[in-house]
Image (cartoon, rainbow, N blue to C red):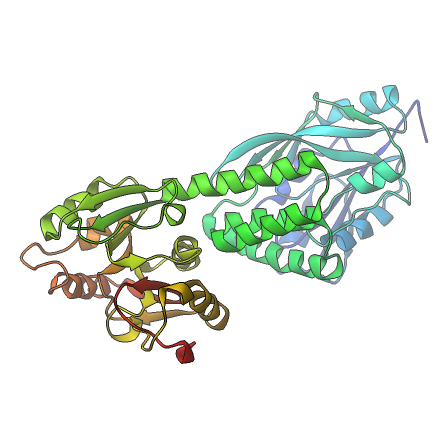
Length: 434
C-alpha cells in the first residue's frame, strides 16, 4: 500500500459550484490525484475545472437521488493508496501534513477537524475523511452518507489527526439552506422506506424536520427512533432531542390570556414551559402584554378555550413554512365565519375529534381576509410595520377586524390552520363534519 510513500486521491461530487470551486481546488495542490464527478452542472463549473492550475480528472454521471452512489462512483475512479473525500464548498487547510500521518499510521483511517459554517450557526466536529483505497470501503445511505459502517466492518483502526483542518462554508442563505433541507427530507424518507427499522435514519429525519421548524412531526419521529433502539446511550440522545425541542418551544412562543378570572386556565400539560401573561378584556392592556412578551410568536386567546394535542407546534409550523404569514388562527366550534366548525361533540370527545381533523386536513392552510381575534397567533415581527390593535376599538368588537385589514394592506397574509382544532366551552360541534 505504499507504506513509506503513501499517495492520496481527493474525491468530490459537484453540481453548479462555480462560486466555491476555485477556493477548494486552490487548497488541494498537494494532492496526488483530484477526481471530480459532476452530477449535472449548468453553470461554469466545468470551465473552472478546465482552467484550474491543478490537474483534475473530470467525470460526469446522472444524478439518481443518491449521494452515496455518486460518491462511490468517484471512489471507483481513484488510483492512489488513500482517499480523502471533500465537498466543493470546503477548503483543506494543512493538507500537506496528511502524508506524514499516513506514513506513521499505515492502513488506518483518519478523523479530521471540520469547522462548519452555515446560515445560522458555527460548530467544530471531528469527521471521518480519509480511508485506505479498498473496494470494500464505500459510502451508504442516499443522504447523510457515511463510511463508518464500512470501516467498522473492515476492522480498521482510527487516528485523530488535527494538523489538517477542513473548513465547510456550507449554505450562505436561509433560502438555500431550506431548499437543501427539503431535498434531504425527501431522500431520508426514501431511505427509511427501504430501511424502516433503522433508528439512525429516523434520528436524521428528526433533525431535518427540526431544522425546518416542523416541530410536531419532529416529536413523532423522535418517539419512533426511541421505540426502535435498545441501546441506552442512544435512547438518552433521543430523549435529549425531545428536551431541546420542548425548550426551543418555550423560547419561541408566549401566551397572552385574556381573562376576567371567571372561567378556566389552559391545561398545564398543553402550555408547559410557556410564558403566560394574564390581562383583562381591555385593548390597551392586551397591546401592552403582547409588546412585553419575550416570544417570537404571541398566542392571544380568551380563557374559555380547551387546547388539544400539538396545537402549538402545528400552528408554528405554518410560520416556518411560509415567510409572508403575519397571523394564524385555528378552527373551532366557537370562532367566526371560515374558522367555525358547526355541530355537536362532548368535552370527552375533543381529542378524538381533533385527531380526525388532523388526519383529514393535515398541513392544510387556507388564506383568508379575516381571523377571529378570540384565538390567534401573531408573528411579533409585524408589530413595527403593521402595529397592534387600534385602542379606539374594543377588543373583539372591531379591533380584530381592523388589524386584519392593516395586515393585508401591508402585503402580508392571514392564514387558517385547518388541521388545528381548539374547543370553546359551552359551544357545540358535529362529528359528521370531520
